[in-house]
Each structure stands twice: as structure tokens, then as C-alpha cells.
Image (cartoon, rainbow, N blue to C red; front, side):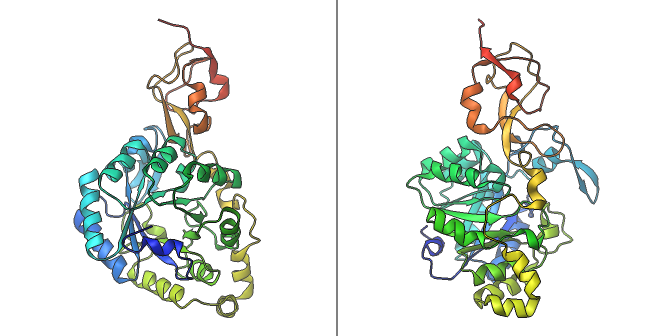
Length: 367
């Protein structure tokens, strides 16, 4: 990676690259986005990250509800509320870079990816649920930009498949547990050196645990190349991720702990051997207990956009690659989109539901 410190990710010099994930905590308010960014940089972040959201690229309108302080809210509506458009992202990018920090942003589909490319971003980030979003992976790989992939709620085969799309492109990997908050004992932090040796690339951690220091400090002791942590001004703010984010003082304490390059023995003495060793794990890649139920639901699959009737041609604007989440049924993996496109629907598929193999008939015959 080049520019604004991204090259450090690939230097393997023992100095972790620290990313402050702002997500959508700005609520679409550019003033708050600037305040968040400047506070994160002042707290020691090397990089500030946003999410470039279009609800239609992420979930179906009938995905279901999320519990929020104001009461149950449609998740689709929550995502719609934080759509900002490329001009907003571009202005925040320019502001972050004017402060000397790196800027990173997560796209969730082809539209958001192409808009980020048009803004001249220096690197890309793929969130864990999109690790199997084949069209998005191929789009990003075509840019040749350094890309960071998060690997929560995934198997080793999923990781290998995703990395295989980025031949010749600088890539780093983030180990992650897709649970909010994620239990410390699920982190299996010894996995990062294993993945780094297996794939020959820098590996770090994206931390969703509640403690501000423990997981990042262990990661630093193991030599993780990257530490990513959600950032907020206050945990009482109304961002979707604010309850597990760090306010400035806690983030600064985390940065200090990482930069001190602690030893595992020192951390065992401070936090207790049992607690540290539980977080270290055995280094074997598997779905963490807290995320097993999310597999195939948080990840992408093929869903019906509108009611599909038996005999309809599949793929004529009636399929999309979306997260399933809690209410709808999961569908076929995105890698098979080309296989099902052009086939006839074998049975009716309700609007929003995942497309199953039993829904796929023979070659479509029609006018």
C-alpha cells in the first residue's frame, strides 16, 4: 500500500497499523464525521474508515427488525437512513487525508465500489459478510488497489476462495469474530500467525470484544500487522455499532497498549493466565461458537427480488446477492449466480427469500 501510511501494512516491522472504524456512526452528519475522524486521529489512529452504504446493496426490504432505543426498527430503513452518497464520502476522505491519516472505506456492492474508485481511494476494505460476494471481489480485484479482507463468519475454504480472486493484488487479511460484542474466548488469536504463514500475507485482527485493551494487546504481542476497532464519541450515541465501539480515551489507551509491544507473559500477569490463554486459542481456523448461527445468514447468498413464479426466467432483474440476516431463508452461494441465471424457476419463490437449488429448473424456454 502506498500513501498515508498504508505501505506500513506490508513492511512486517512489528508496528501494527491501527484502524479506527467509524462505520455509520456519523449518522450522515458531515460535521460529526469530521469530529469523529479528528478525535480518532488524535487518539492515535493511523487510518480512519467509513462504510459507503446503499441499503439495496446489502439487504432486502423485508429482512426484519433490529432492537433500537426508540423501539424495533426495520433494518432496511436503518441502512437507508445512513446512505450518504459519494460526495459526502469524498469530502470526509479529503479531510482525513489533510490530517495526515490514511482513509479507508468499505463498499457493499458494485455501485459503491465504483464510486469509491472514482473518488481516488488508495485502498479498499471488504467486510466479513462480503467475503463470498464474488462479483464484488472480482470488481475490486480489477482495480489492482491494495485490499484488506475481513474473515469473520467464514471457513478456511471461504478465505482461500476469496484470496484466490486477488491474484497479483496486494492483500492483507483481518481475523474477526462476527458477533457484537464478541466473547474474548472466541478470538483464537494464534490463528493470525497461522494464516500469515499459510497464505504469505499480512494478517491482523478486527476486534469487536468489549474490553478496550485485552484483544488488541495480545494481537500486538503476537505481531499482528493490523488492529481495527470501532470508534465513537460516546457509547450512548445512536450508531448501530456504538455499543461496542471505543470512545476517545479508551481508544487512546488501546493505542498505548499496542505501541508498548507487550509480552504474553506480561499480559498473563496483568489479566490472568486463563483469560489470556483462552483468547489465544489453538490457531486452527473454525467458526467461533458465537458466530456459528450467523453462518450463511450474515454471509451473502442469492435472493429473490420480487415474487418469482414457476416458469419465470431466473436472472432478469429478479435475483440479487444479499445478506440474509434473521428472518428470510438463506439461498445459494453467490459463486453459482452464473449457473442459475437463464434457468427456469421450478417453483414459486416468495419475494425476498433465498433461492434454493430446488427452485432451479431446466433451461428457460420462452418468447
